[in-house]
Amino acid sequence: MKDQSNSTKYPVISECPVCHHELTVTTLHCDHCHTGIEGKFTLSKFNYLDTEKLYFIEVFVKNRGNIKSIEKEMNLSYPTIKKMLDEVIVGLGYNLDTTVTAEETDTEEKPEKPEKPKDNFRLDILEKLNNGELEVEKAMELLKKLKKGGI
Image (tube, rainbow, N blue to C red; front, side):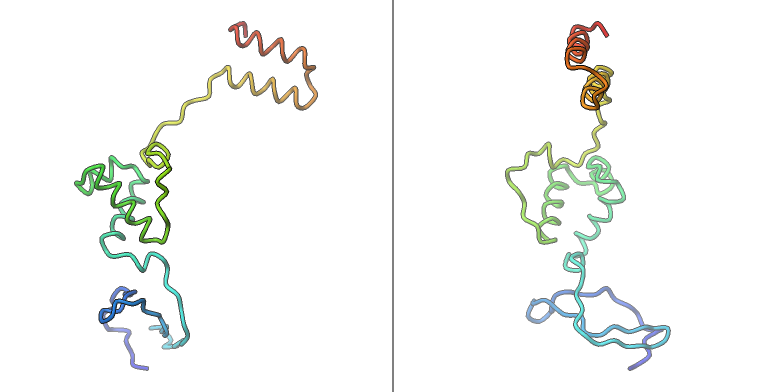
């Protein structure tokens, strides 16, 4: 095998430039010890994405999925970012679920609502009831007081 340690390296292509069918990796080579391994190797799903989609994924991850930050960095509109995200999802082999609401798929950072103190008390009461630390009547009484604002 020819020494390629000083030769230029190119990204792996996944599609045949002649017939546009999927290419298979059949040889791996170590530039350090010159070991060659032949076989049939698979590529990652990401290797089948074009450069533009890979760049989008890089920006998306770097910005932790914050759409506003991605819009700013790529100088693109919200609908364009969402369209690109959909294209990446399809490119990775997944189907877009048209029944999912925009709110469920929105990766925009949303602050979590802090638990209300009443919720903490309610959970404590129910946990104590479940553990046998409270009688049902006492738990009902505490929950009623909590509802009325007496706790």
